Length: 454
Image (cartoon, rainbow, N blue to C red; front, side):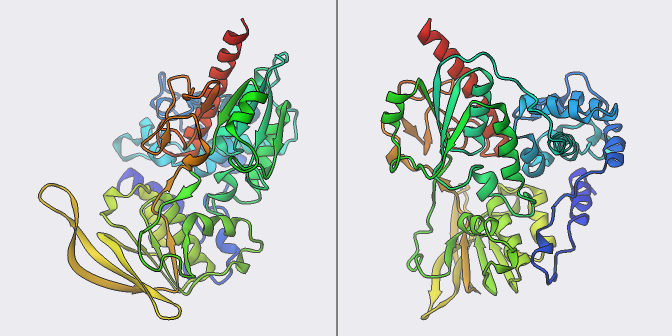
């Protein structure tokens, strides 16, 4: 058994025995149960506290991982949390949803000689949750007010991270959010079993404790606000709009009832209480190979779908979903079909299923259809084939490859406008990367404002 397989077995074993479970709400309990104090102490003592630790380099936000783990081992979880949050103010969400198995934990030196990595994510969650549960004053203080104002578009991870760091630096921040709640994908896009007990909202409330941040809801870019108007009213603007549109299959019948975007399915489920009230098909097809596809497939199964089939056009090794996520789907009873692409939606008054063509790589390495087809029955189809940016609201900004172009200081080609998160090309489209983008952009905005007022 490899290190990753051992980790998967450990986590999946702690996961709910979800197959065949009748109670949908029980199927949405914590994917990774929280550590007790005793468990955290024992796990923290496994850390070797490496000098120049590779786990720190592997973390997009460069959390001092050995430093915070040492504090846990010496019974100082609040100090550990402050170490985490100083680098990643959304460390609580990242501890729950970050693919640690391919980031910090993959880099852990404990992986040598078939040992298993220190459970960094679980320790991070333990520390942050301990601090947040105590209702203490916000752990960070604002600098003296600068008199400068910053507009942030989007209350997702990038926007909130930028707002928090900018407020720390003494600026006043107004966040404009298109939806009725803050959090972005943390609230609307992550599987319900990854973000339980309304944690996304509790984290935002904690973050706002710094002061100097105001959020205006139901303010959509291009409808209620514009870049130009914000440039006129604020000293700087940060764009953290994420990827607001989803890709289409390009097939006839795609608008047929029952054919939905997986991200919308997840969003609806996250806002439904109890979860058992969420409608789901008996036979569900999910198309895609990323974590969103896995999240949608597993949740459909836990909601009571009789058969869930995830179809991906290439092999398992090409999926952007991690090995742990792929294994999670299989252990939850999801049927995974590789090397197949959708070619037709089947309907006769109601949705009947899909036709797929088997695929392969030709001599040049190009993905091609083989001409051999098969059908899968379905009364619900969920598309998880990627998202794209809405460019029509971003006048004045250069867009290349579906991403906003920024320089090394996160500044766009529009004067005084910065951007970060999934809408720019800075790394993997992960919450942790968005948090880092927002933090670094706030630091860059601070330098920009100082230079323009000098």
